[in-house]
Length: 304
Image 1 (cartoon, rainbow, N blue to C red):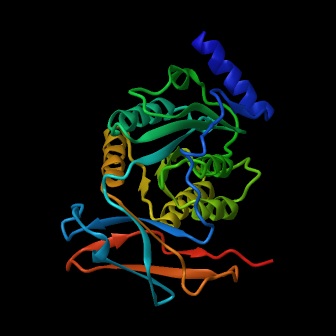
Image 2 (image 1 turned 90 degrees about the horizontal axis):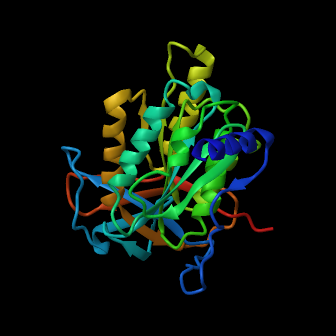
Image 3 (image 1 turned 90 degrees about the vertical axis):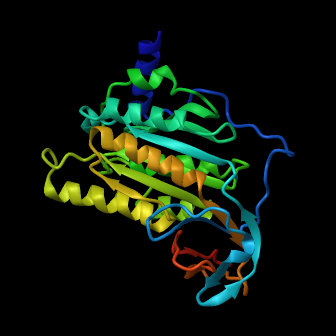
């Protein structure tokens, strides 16, 4: 039964049929969170000189600047704030050697989440499929383990779809974890479009590059590395290159720990920006000797 279901997923991925195996996300008005499109949300990772996470900070410890102008903090979430994560697993033909390791690492991530955190699982080849809805689970759905890699790579479409689903979630801390060899060969959406919606939804992206340089053409490897690195750096996440076997488990452990120790801050830009231009963001912390990582800025909506 599991293998038959896995085969049906592969067929739909390659025939272009949209697929969501579980029920569509439905939220009552009480559960949904209505955010103004002008609220800028930032997920912040704060570390000390030893790269240890700095906890116990309060709202008054942070200062936000947009294009050098101080901003007033309108929302503050401490380390205990729950997060929603979308795990994207590349199941294209080039992942034959890495798919089982990728699934095992994703399972390790799921097992280390807290009770209030939720995750969903997506697979992508020619098309994108959500194979496990958002929720708290001890394991990945068995169906993931039976999918055989085949086809091309719609990486940007996978990110785009996950962002669209995450923006409907009530959690204000949102993340995407991408396990892929990175070379997009089939998406309808561009990298720029995927990054645009990720910024609008305040999604942090963590990317694990599974490209094996021994089997990749140099141009393809560089394209993969550039795309995955850009996704992480432009959203305040992390890019992890060639993690190998046990290193991949360690990388996912590190990502879980980072998500647990982040702060989430929101502000309404003053003056309000509707120019469609890029605006630089910087964050300072009153505690000496600490470093802050977050997305470097955002593109303002354009008034029509």
